[in-house]
Structures are given as C-alpha cells and as structure tokens.
Amino acid sequence: NWLKTWKPGSHDLGSLKVLINGGARLAPELRRRVREQFGCQFQEDFGTGEGLLNMTRLDDDDERVFNSSGAPVCADDEIRVVDNAGHEVPDGESGELICRGPYTVRGYYNAPEANAQAFTADGFYRTGDVVRKRGRYIYVEGRRKDLINRGGEKISAEEVENLIFRHPKVESVCVVAMPDEVYGERACAFVIPKAGQSIGFRELTDFLLQQRIAKFKLPERLEIVDQFPLSPAGKILRRELRAVIEQKLAMERVNEGGSEWPR
Image (cartoon, rainbow, N blue to C red; front, side, top):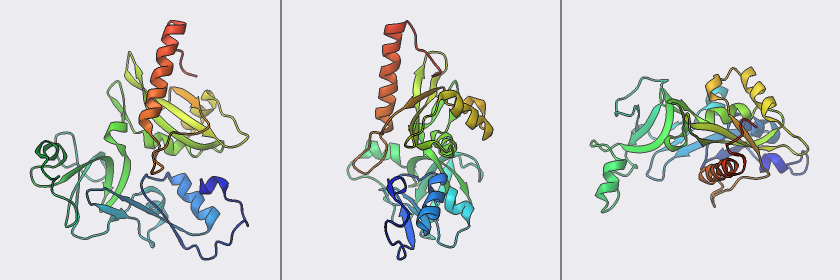
C-alpha cells in the first residue's frame, strides 16, 4: 500500500534509512521499488513463531537483498533442507526447511500428537516452508500447502507471482490452485491491475513465456479483482481465493455443462 499510494515529494523521507519487511515474503520486484521510491535500504525478515529468525544484512549484495529471505541471526541456529523422506538435500535443491537452535522451541506443551507431526526425533522443527538454501541463506519458495500439483509436476506459486509482478500493468498478484478433473490441480492467477490499466489472459501468458517460464507452470486461468482478502496481519488469505475459484468452476459446470478455460 505504501508503494501504491506514496507520491514523490509528499513527505520528507530524509530520515528513513531502512525499511524492514516481515510476516510475508516481499516479491523481488517490490523490493526494488522500495529502494527506488523511498531511497532507503531494504531488509527482509523471515522467521517462525516457534523461534527461527533470519534477516538479510545491510551489507549484503543486491542478489541476496532482492531474492533471499536472509540468514539466521544466531550462529548456533541449525538449518537443514530435507526431502519428503526427511533426507537432507544439497544446496540449491528445493525441500522443506527444518531448524533447531537456542531460541527455537523443542515441543508444544502437553501436545504429544502435535509434537510428533511438527518435530523430528532429534528436535528439529518442521517449518512447512519450501525453500532452497545457499550456504546459510534461505530462498523461500512458499508453503508446502501452497504448492500446486499439476499432474505430479509441482509449481511454486511464489515463483510464478514473482514473474507476474514484473509486468508493468500489474499492481498485485496471487496464484492459487484450482481443481481439475484431469491434472488434479491447475494454476489460477488473481491479479489486481494498476489504476487505469487492464490485462488479458493471453497478454499475461505471452509475457511469462518471454520470462522463459516452463510452460507447465503457466497460469491456466486469470481472474481480475479489485482487492484480496487479507488476514488481520495483512497476509493474503489464499484459502479464500481457492474457495472463490472452486465455487466459480462449480457454477460454470452447472450453468454451462463444463468449466471454460483459459480465460
């Protein structure tokens, strides 16, 4: 909202040195806009309520500042990226982030069933975040539950969103799974255009192909909206958007004898 409503010269920002983002990952394109519009340094903050805290450093290079979610703030924090079987994967490969450290809890009070799901036998907390690791730096791809499973091919909603954010007509975007009888799920992009702009499905997919996206990751439906449902913390409620598209598809099947896509 700050990026959208701020007008050059409307306020003296001379004292603004650093803008820190937390709660939800900020897309690389929006991080660049922060620096360009506000003339300050950007710092990404990523963590969990159970403990682990990561931050980009003020002297990091642009690649880390714009793309990563930082590195742990404590040298004693242990971080691993594991596959579905719990085996650690090499740096650069995608998997679930698990962590253990001096300020990360080792279990929930009086909740053995929850602990069995949330913690490994050796005390690592399963964050549920899908990431890639480069050294100590974390690159978040999204929540495990937000991955779109298109016929066995996993699509990171955040990866597609980051590319759509580059489109000059796009103000904001959220990509969610929509049900499909053949593939199980397909990707649907909810887009808020910039004021006075409009964007169509073919224009969007052509733009993404120019960004060299894999074709199976392309959104297969576009929904134009004025706003997103938000939590009290300001996070987009993806589950509500999934419910919206599921309801639309169901109505189309009733009214038209089958869903009509892409659109």
